[in-house]
Length: 194
Image 1 (tube, rainbow, N blue to C red):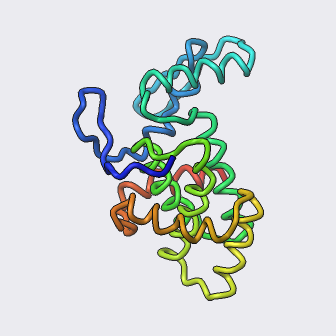
Image 2: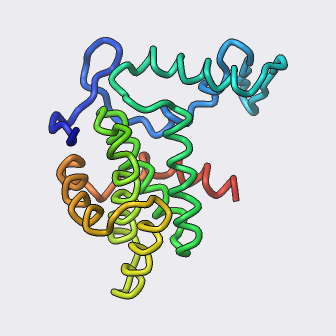
């Protein structure tokens, strides 16, 4: 189904919620009931009892579904798509700030409940493409190379991507220039992972 055009998501009390860049990357998510994260003033530590990875993934996705019933994808699928976005961006030599912006666009669409199994890869691709156009000084051949890579990686047609780019732009209310407080947490995580 196409994107819905209601552009805000609700918190648990039904109030319109502000985008939180740490929400989907919260270290508590992979816990399920098998892991305890202890956060202290200057460090964070984790105590984990052994559990099969498949059970842990299942628990994490169930907990996520309970907290966000309007999101049609599992947390593990969302994270997998973000990994693909990062890997593709690295192959195309895009800066970590560009990937961070793509993550913000993508997560906003996720939290609005606009992604589903049919459009998830197009959304991820459109977010990378929009972020690259906004934050990078790309030449025409570099944009073509990026679109080729997106088409190859996410296995969709470039015409669909170009058409969907505008749909994503409208869903984001044309708000492609992002405040630092939305981009910086993603940027820090990306640069720490490298």
